[in-house]
Amino acid sequence: MRNISRGLKRPYLHTVLRLSLAIFLLISSAAILYATAQNFHAVQILSTRALESTALALSSSAETALRATGNVAGAEIREIFSDRVVAYALIAGKDGKVLFHTNPRLVGSHLSDEGNLRWPSETASGQRIKLRTGLPAYEFNYILHRPDGTAELLRLVLYTTPADRIVSDARRMWWTVGFILIFLWTAGIMLERVFTRHLRLQEELERQNQLAFIGQMTAVLAHEIRNALGSIKGYVQWVHEKLEKPDPKKEGLSVVLLGVERIESLINDLLSFSRKEEYRIEPLDPVYLLREAINSAVPSWKGKMELEAKPGTQAMGDREKLYRVLLNGIRNAIQAMEGDGNLQIVVSPDGRWVKIRIKDTGPGIPADEIPRLFTPFHTTKTEGTGLGLAYSKKVVEGMGGKISLVNREGKTGAVLTIQLPKTREG
Image 1 (tube, helix red, strand yellow):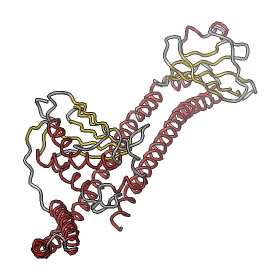
Image 2 (cartoon, one colour):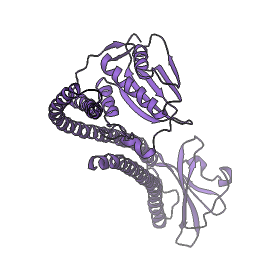
Image 3 (cartoon, one colour):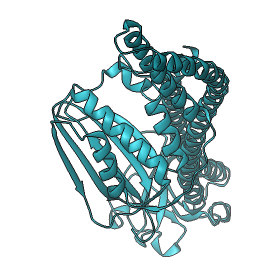
Image 4 (spheres, helix red, strand yellow):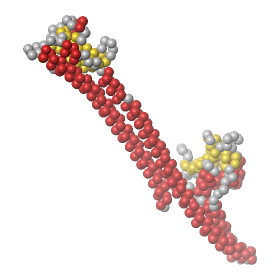
């Protein structure tokens, strides 16, 4: 019961861990994207503030020089605006007349010649613009206050290339973040697959250990029971032969012999299941083996039987062991239909596999029984041993194949699917 409970809990644990990993990746990705967006926005703000601070510093220096000298066209003013970052600078009166310009030819012109005069409503204000050359720039308007109380407009236009370079470098962070997210999700998916494989291997190891323990136990018990049973059977047969037919004891001994034969059959099943199998893998024709199994399993069955197969389909497997698996599968299907019904067997290639599907029209399998179908000693029959499907799974997987038993979709009944590797020629 503990192993069954573990088997039922493991898919639930796998689902919880997969969901937890997905949530972690989503939250981590969202956090990385949010932090990157915030950083990029902060860089944009800082670059604009850096331009504003530069413009304000130059404007303050110009205002100080202007107050000290009173000369708008003085050398001090030109020296202040000779910085490389300055595209151009001008000082204009309220009438729009240009009193100073870094281009001396424009001194005396009016701002209306270059555009509408925009007198700032505040002491200082700035905005990003584009020069006539198409280059980005930052326009800073500053009100200069003369000692006599008059006000003049200082318009300072700065190149934004250094600041834009910083923003461009920050924009490249998105590529880095993209690669980080791709790496993070790839690592997460690989981790999930590794964990899934680990769980599958752990489950398989537990199953193998369980089967090994059961095999050792059943082998010892089977040998001891068969030895004792041989003595009992021999003695009963001897007495049965000595008695005359009218003796009522003879009929009772016949019943005992039938019971002994049934126990012998069970012992043989136990020994077959418990022993370590050796496989002789070779190309084989599954259709030929199916016909043999059908002739052995359904000689007196009254139902309808259909065999659909593509000619020449070859699979790799052990001929003797596959025959036993097919015979067991056909007998189980016939028993499920209780003497009548439609048995359909389909053999078809599927990629690198050959699929053998045995379909019946019986009542199907209860949903709560499906997870335990291939568990040793678990059976839904009143007289079954629960070793047929367990043995089939053991040898099919030993031949490198797969086996499953599920209910049919949209129809009553069940379908047993056996997948074997296809030969290179097939």
